[in-house]
Image (tube, one colour):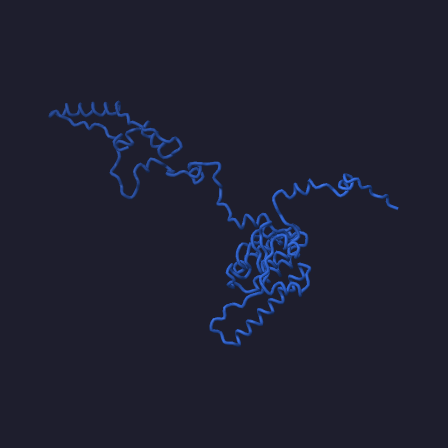
Length: 320
């Protein structure tokens, strides 16, 4: 901009004043005639550059005869009555490279997407943070719609880890169980990996007829374990042991209620860890159905009992 606004400077060379005045007048006329400020390519949507180019085109002396720059103001701002140095926020946003596939807002996290589909996923041991989240999700889904079913997918080792170390109190599993029992919705439970201890109770506590298990999932029931006692006094260790026995009896009664087995049978099996595959879990009463890909098509292709009798040549006697 600075280089484009420079013009040749005319200085008189004659000693005579008359010749000097004539030369000065000639230079001023020649400057007005030949002063053409080159205008570089500009963005026509930019109000500042468009106005500046218009002034340079119509009255170049406005730009040529500039006063000394004042440090308190930016150059050329006096040309504008109400200058707009920047576009509006909407124009700035539209000027950024646009992609129609770019999301307009950040996507939600995965648990929120599952919750939108009324799916509650238990994929960790039952520690207090997990219990807090699961109970809150169950109450929220009932508040959203008390008639639509809730789907609970289970892949949890309960209140213990894989190596058997206790990571949570048995009350964590009982808290989720009580929340499930208070809901008005149908609860569909699905074991997708492991359902051990308290997680097996949650699997069996689903609505009858809607308790499922994947073909290679595992279920296991076991006695609750005593948490690490450390340097506790013997009296305190005895109190904890009594509490564990109470939790064991409660777990046995609840499993007996939801599986349809007697308390004695469940108690005998729980003396040692009792593992169940999908078939054994169905026989024991923990689940109702085994899920596998293509099950709907296989069941649809099965002939009805009447067709079986007809194909076998069996005639049904008329009712008397």
